[in-house]
Length: 488
Image 1 (cartoon, one colour):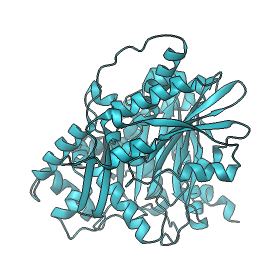
Image 2: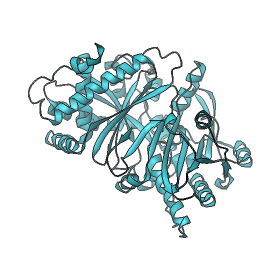
Image 3: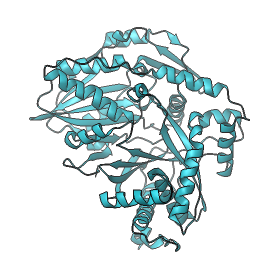
Image 4: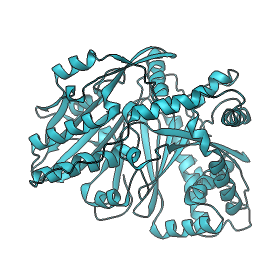
């Protein structure tokens, strides 16, 4: 489904099964055998993994041990006019890989507490070569995408183009261990825009060097090593988990049997059009909250209507980049912020203020991973596959930018979710071209699908009533008739 407005219908969000080459001819860029061999000989490094990278590798290993296929790939594409200049594209892809430190490492997973990093000394050892493929059937294409090496292999990323008569589609397939949402703006500005300069005969301007993801990992580990059970951030995480039953919050409705492979599916809905978005932002400001605070208030109110819970416990990822250099750097710079929101069923304004206050007061907790809290508070429980995060992305803010968002109108930008077993329920709310949409990545079984449908119905109902002014001082209407109308 397309989210957002604009001449090209905005941003398409789907699963990898929606990415079909059709009559197009595929060229992919993959590591040369010589490059793979050089990287395999890379020495060990004492640079720690980031907390997110550690959690990713543990999750991948845990799922594999249970016979599950871990969803791990971040996949995107965009269109360019004309016939691809393979030589120019080879240049910009290799320049990108050599420029960013995250691509220079690979990992040996020995056990959950022992993960060894290997890092190349010379970025010039990285050499990705174009490979021309025969025409692929849809099943062959999907197998190609999903055969991208796993995160304990160095070359767990691929790039490519699908050439059509009058344009080509550039695609990237990158394991999550090396990226976060910045991949959309980073790949666009660094690969496609540099490609355009080259094919027009221009000279690439020497860009300022990016920040180092290694430096980020070192700083993060230094902060974590200084923590104790008495540290304020640790105490707040412990309190949050204990208030939520001893672990992180789950999706509020049943998700079925997650011990068996089901794969993942996706639901996409529009929450607010342009007029509703403008009205909602005005209401948030009047309530003394930002847009994100109002969003989490609606999530809390919807959960109250579904479950009767008068306190909402939630998680939201946040970007930990702080400098201009970091905002132009590839890697996984994400942290997680917990939210504790007392729900006032009759007042969006009070709930929004509470949500905003909770986020603002807990923002420093993004620098402390829950995995590290578990080491200091072993009575708490690790999260399970029912765990839920709600991510808010505004394409007018970093790591996206107004420039990138405006170019998206003409580039047919698409995001594809990995259709394998999801690590948790992941909810993304995106503000694009002044419309707000939501997509939910969930286990592909009938119970989860029904629950996600009910959840989205409840959430859309709350947003609709908030922007129409109906909540006022009266109790919000129960969503039973709205969410369960199809049960008859």
